[in-house]
Amino acid sequence: MRTGWLLDGNQWYYLNSNGTMKTGWLLDGNQWYYLNSNGTMKTGWLQEGSTWYYLQLNGVMQTGFASIDGTTYYFNNSGIWIPENNITATSYINLDLTYASNVTGKEIDADIKKYQPDSPLIGHGNDFVAAQAQYGVNALYLAAHAILESGYGKSEIAYRKHNLFGLRAYDQDPFKYAKYLPTFGDSIAYNANYVRDKYLEKNGSYYYGPTLQGMNVMYSTDQEWSTKIAKIMERIKPFQKQDYLYAKKLPKNPNTLNVDALSNNIPYKTYPQGTKATAKLAAFYYVVPYSFDGVIKSQSVTENNQGTLALGTSVFVHREDPNGWVEFSFTINGNKYWILKTKLNM
Image (cartoon, rainbow, N blue to C red):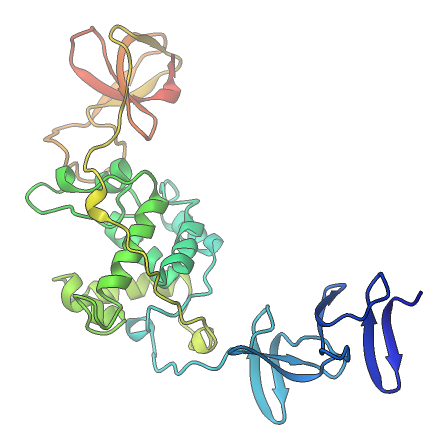
């Protein structure tokens, strides 16, 4: 029984393993082909709904750039023809932020690591790329905004509440009112959803164009805010117009994340009264569970670092925060401090 490719006259056909004639899409090796309803191998343009493909003379689906009848076309990795975008931007300042960036999570992580090797944002590059796909906002912008707003994830609000963008951090008491988010990824998602809905949509409450310039009108009183964001974007991945000529125009996610449903409170794990632990190595301990040099806004602290807890010291432990800090005291009702759980035998 004949199977596989069959040349009949000047037409190619493909026979399935049971000898029947194949129609529709065919993956042979690592190449895609299309067989017409009569079984003949398709060449040239193919339309499926509103999507166009191009099959070369050998039947192989075209990807990448191709010159067809003197005109250059671009086909993505799925073979879909991508029309050229009308990009008028000359820099990130006036780029439409609803176009997808081709930045990778690794590129974002590498930039953060280069400038702030101890940043807790390292390793979250893919979260920006994921938010771009899910909520329709340029990933490079999201990364630059987070870096600027949170000081590389090292501000107290960013570190302790995983709130990278100051969500609901009202001036009268920023730390108290700032929303708590379980992860940096959640913070990135909520911000992307909010920015797309309020700043990048024509019917958005603060829409003045889907660009950094447009956002700056209502987002920040700092008139240099957009320039600062653009400089970080440029540093991570220099602007090239061709990167956006065939970039995906990102759709808006119809679902809205409910910011008001988020709590302001950090969820702590409480230990039974009288629980004890010992220091398994000498380590610094603090008034606030935060070891960076940023401004502490949760309470008035003259000196956060209280010194070194000596190896073998026995302490009472009270609760644990989501970042792995444990609150302890030297006596059961004594003053309370914080140390990383990894420094204790518990």
